[in-house]
Structures are given as structure tokens and as C-alpha cells.
Length: 145
Image (cartoon, rainbow, N blue to C red; front, top):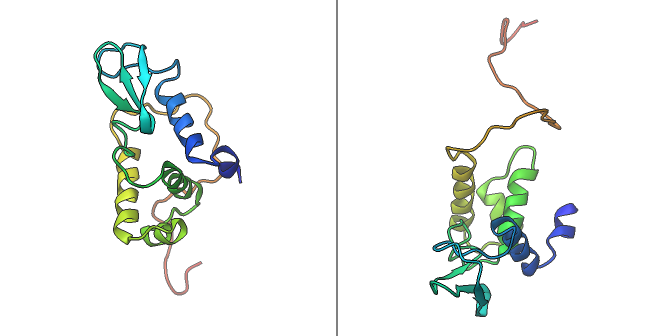
């Protein structure tokens, strides 16, 4: 599985988030300075304004007690399944202790997927499989042709 090749450890997840959040290296979210100290537990302190931050600050992962690897697995299961995944299935697959955790995570992801201000896809967009809804035309029920 491609996911397992890319994210083998917690550090792989942290490195991935850092590459997205700070593609050119650390930048203080308050003053914009690139000068910083690395502290313990993945914390960074800005050398100029002394603000402490982590790569997960301001994200859905912030202050979570669950490892990022579990979060990333949840995201993969949600987007990779053709028909999605239920909170109960997610709880079982990831070995989460409570249904409430998996339900909360699913709702967080769903809210993020419909955030306003997202840019629409442009150019040629390739799709593996599409289900387009709508009312079926013609007679329905017994004897329908």
C-alpha cells in the first residue's frame, strides 16, 4: 500500500506536515521570523518574539493525544474508500477506544472538506470513478421497462 510506504512512523507524519506548513523552513506565525530554536517534544521557539509553536498548532491535530500516524491513517481510510467509511468502521479499523473519538474525527474532516474559500479545480481533471445522481426517468416499480 502506498500509504504505508510514505508514512511508516510518527516522524514521517511530522516531516510531511512541516513540508506543507513551512516549505522553506520554519517561519514564526506571529512575527514571520525564520530564526528559531528547536525545543523538546517538537516545539519551536521564535528567536525574535519568543513565541512557542508546533507544526500542529492551528490544525485539527492540535492538542490531540492520539499519534499523527493514527490521524493520517484515518484520513487515508476516509478518502480512499469508494463509499467512505462509518465512524463505527473507523473505530474498529484504527483500534480507537471510543466511538465518540471516531465520530468526532469524521465530523472534523467533513467540515474541512466543505470549508468556504477553497479554490475550485481547474484545467483537466481526471477521475477514476464517478457516480452522478438524479431522478431516474421513465416508469418505476413493477412492470417497468
